[in-house]
Amino acid sequence: MIPLALLPGSALWGAHLDELLARPEALWVYGAPGSGRKSLAAELAARRGVGWLDATSVAEALGWLGGHPRGVIAAHEPAPPAAPCLALRLPSLEEHPEAISDLLAHLAQDEGVAPPLPSALAALPCPGNLRELRNRLLRWKLLGQLPSHEAAGPPRFEAEDLATNLHELERFLLHRALRRAYGNRVETAQRLGVSRRQVYLLISRHGDPVRGEAASGELPRRVLKRRNGQNSSPDPSTR
Image (cartoon, rainbow, N blue to C red; front, side, top):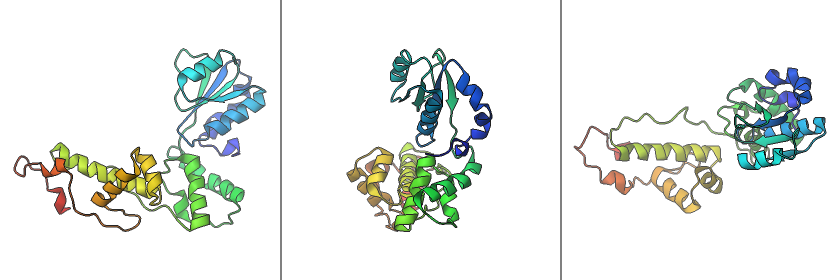
C-alpha cells in the first residue's frame, strides 16, 4: 500500500488527518480511477476502526451509509450536497506533478527496480494516475518499453465541415490511446470503448505511431461525400 504522505495533495489534508479522523461524520473519498482513493479509504477506515466500501454508484454509497454512519466510502463521483458525510477529493498527478518522483521511487522499491529510473516514466500526462505509474514501471522492467511522446492537446480544427473535423479528431484519439496502451490493441479498444475489430479498422485508416504502421489513405464515406467547393475545408487526404 502506498503511504498516505505520498498521495497527490496529501500536504493539503495530511496536516489535519487526526482532526479528520475524529469528525463524527462518515468520510467520502473520491477521485479519478487510479488516484489512490481506495488506499486512502481503507487506511482511514482502519484508523477509525470502521468499515469501508468501494462504491460503484452514488445510490449504493448512500444506501450503505445508512447503516454505517461513521464509515468510509471510496467513490469516483463527489458526494451529493445533502449526503451525511464529509467529502475529500483526491487530486490527479497533473494537479500535483511534484508527487511523481517520490511515488515512482516507492513503486520501484516495491517492484525491486533499482535506480536510476528513466525520466520518461515521470512524463505527463499520466491518465491512470498511480495505476498508470505502476503500469509504466512494470512495462519498462519486464518489456523494456517506455511511454512515447504524445500530442499536447487536440488537433487544430482548420476545416469548416463536420466530416473533416470528426476525421481529424478520430485520428487524434486513436493515436493517443495507442500511445497510452504502448501499441496494445486490446487495451486500446478498452480505452476507446470500441471493439478490437473497430480498432484495426481505425488503424488501417489512420496508421499506428507506436508500431510505425502507415495509414492506408482510405477515407470514410462521410468525408468522401463532402463536396469540394462547398466550403474552404482542406482535403484530409492530402495531409
